[in-house]
Amino acid sequence: MEVQKDLRYTMEHEWVRVNGTKAVIGITDFAQGQLGDVVFVEMPKVGAEITQEQTFGVVESVKTVSDLYAPLSGKVIAVNTELETQPEIVNAEPFGKGWIIEIELSDAKEIEKLLTPEQYIEQCEKEQ
Amino acid sequence: MSQESSTTLKTTPLIELHKELGAKLVPFAGWHMPIQYTGVIQEHLCVRNGVGIFDVSHMGEIDIQGKDAKPFLQKLVTNDIEKMSDCSILYTVMCYENGGVVDDLLVHRFSEEHFFLCVNASNTDKDFNWIQKLAGPFDVAVKNISSLTAQLAIQGKDAEQLLQKSSDVSLGDLGYYHFKKGKIHNNDCIISRTGYTGEDGFEIYVEWNKAESLCRKILEDGKPFKLQPIGLAARDTLRLEMGYALYGNDITAETSPLEAGLSWVVQLQKKDFVGKVPLQKQKEAGLKRKLAGIKLLERGVPRPHYQVFSGDKPVGELTSGTFSPSLNIGIGLCYVSPEHSKVGTQLSIEIRNQKVPAEIARPPFVPSRVKK
Image (cartoon, rainbow over all chains, first blue to last red; front, side, top):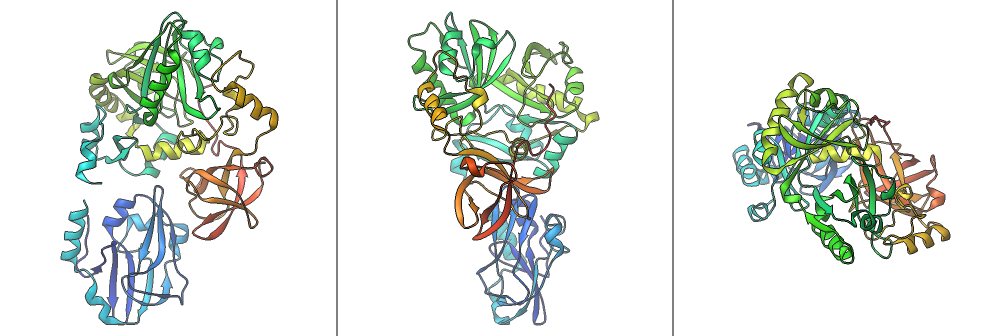
């Protein structure tokens, strides 16, 4: 299982890469492994507002449906349209080409609530 | 899954092998079973394109022996036992007095006085009790041999070539829905040409404590064929592409076999069987609902219990649904009224409050390649 050092995480297995006032969001390697083959990703529209800890979309694998929880609040400025036809990229490259949305942050202080990589590793170990 | 629940689950004789092979193990029908090894889509395509091996030792086996074995089974099940010859297999259901389904099962005939049944894992105890209760007036001995009998399914176009390497009986002349007693790697087996995938293949019954070494040898033999172990997740997507009914989803105590499209296994001309009268009446009165295949016309994954709509009107409910790895679309089975069950009927499936366009289709969704 891979956990990238430069990201922050949620208890629900999303990652976030903050870059100034913007942030890219995806699901972790642990999450994609637990889900199995991802066959559908439901994403918000560009312009939609998302709220920290609230659902903003859905990932479906062959076996299960899993909600996506927003790590941070903000306005969606990009969605990964490649996932509409190739959702399996989430399995292959969860931290890279398998990103899900990008947002413009509305409150940078929210970052403090997120898990550090070390805390996230601990969380995964508990769940395994 | 908590530690507590895993300790109460039953395990098949292959549990250690599954762990070695990297299986993800989950609770299923009271068993600790491999749901996947490498990934459901890859495993599914392995069976469709080559050959895969499944541990289905959780399935139940019930032995029926005695002078009245044939008349007893004729009373117990809906299909016609009379047409069976030795070493043939019959797919059937058995019903309650009210016509609801107790289980679907395979009947194997050794002789007029000796049969064995293969039943669903989740129903084994219920079935055994039901069969014993009905057996009262008949001269038969009913034995639950599930804990002595392991089962491996080898499915896919290369199954015959692979298995022939270690089998002492000729498999080329073993017809669909027939079995032979034979040896595989010197283990006494019942080898039947049956399966739950829509591919050619075999189901092998072997003594419980011989199953692990046998499976290891078959995996070794299978290397040139790229044989892989296949989990329950792919077993479900494979069966659903064929439109095969699954007990607990598509057929239950609350559904009749006629509604489930299984009228071909309900031989109403038989003199008597449990559930005949209500089924006869249901047939005469006409069915109020039918199990139909349905496919999504846009991307998405249909799931059991999702509602089916015609325009704004709810017309039924999915009992099975999945993403089809062969077709890359969502497929399912649903109960709808007969007028909505015709092939090509335009409907929709409600997925998270959105109606996604769907169309009634006649299963199999993927052409069957079983040996005919």
